[in-house]
Structure formats: structure tokens, C-alpha cells
Amino acid sequence: MQRRGKGSNAYRKPPNTFKADVMFINKHAESIKNGEVIEFIDDPGHKAPLMLIRYDDYTENTLLAPEGIKIGDKIQDGSNATPTLGSILNLGNISDGMPIYNIEALPGDGGKYARAPGSYATVIAHTQNRVTVLLPSKQTVDLNPECRAEIGVIAGGGATTKPIMKAGKAFYMNHATNKMWPKNRGVKSNPVDHPFGGKQHHKGASSMTARGAPPGAKVGHIAARRVGRRKRG
Image (cartoon, rainbow, N blue to C red):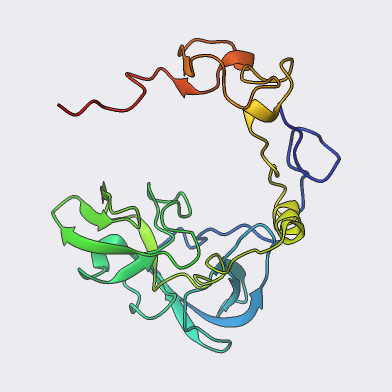
């Protein structure tokens, strides 16, 4: 097992290292809450920028920021809210073809789908009890009309397309989010550390592994139906 993070808590992410949790707070969606963008937050736990919303009742919440929004813009949170940039609506009240993000998988879970920078999903159909959404992966899901989503496209889409160029920059990018990096190949490990390890530069054994293999040996093609190139005849 590879150690992760910043040196302490060797196998767990250190707690309290991120600035905010991103989720919806208006559980009584029938009542519309009006809010204003007052600040943008660069959180090391999120690759997309966050926006701090202050509502009319002086409560605050942090949400993923869409492209094109700016400080001072107004948003609404509620089932019958106006579908403006960054507003939160029920899927049943969002028209077909509209780009959305931070979509709930179940009503009230705070948002699960389409949260990566530059990504968005699209509402493609409504039925009586379900709403069909086209995800960024080009797969479709049928969701409850009471599930909520934000309007727009998540900001920060161009940040991940820029080449890293240096290993040092990659180190600090992963260091900030407590990710395991670098990930060494198994064939570069010692025999005691990995089933594929040793002086040779190839696996030296089949990479097919049983589903019930112990953790130290569960590497490679797990429970694969077949491996190798297909013969064309």
C-alpha cells in the first residue's frame, strides 16, 4: 500500500484541509430564496472555483461557480425559481436542452453528478415521474423530478488542459489535494512490494487475477473474461 498525503495520517487524508463543502441547503424548495454572489473562493479541495452566496435572510452557502457569473450577480434557490445562471431548480421545472451541473442523484443529497471543471449535463426529456439527463460521459440517467441542479456550465474548464511541463508542479498540485502521487508502476517495484516486481521490465506472470484474491495479490486484470489481442479471421 502506498502512503498518501502530506506526511501525517499516512493512509488517510488529513481532516480540515479544505475550505468548504459544496451542497444545497434549501430543503424546503417550494419557498424561493434570493441570493447574491459576494465572493469567489479558491479551494484546494475543488479544481473548479467556488462562489459564496449570501441570501436575503443573511444565511450563506458555498456553491460551484458557473462560467460567466460575477460578484454582485443574483441567483435564486427554489423549485419554481427563475432559470438564471447559477440558480438552483428542480429538474422537473428545467426545460429540455438547458445545460445544468451539480445534479442530485436522489432528492436532498446535495448534488452528485457533473461537478468537474468545464463539465455540464443536459436535460433531454420529461415524463410523468422521471427526467432523463444526458451526463458529460454521454450516458443517460432517469432521475426524480424533485432532484435539484444548478443552471450553467462549471467554470475552470481550461485549467486541466494546460500542460504541466514539470514534475515539481505536478507534485504541488497533488500535494494540495492530498492525492497519492507519483504512482509507481508495479514492474518497477521490488518483488516483496508488488506481484509484478523484480529486475525484469515486464510482469513475468499472467495479469489475470481472481475476484477473491487477497489484497496483496489483487492487481492486474481482476476477474477478466479474456485478455490479449483479438484474432482477426
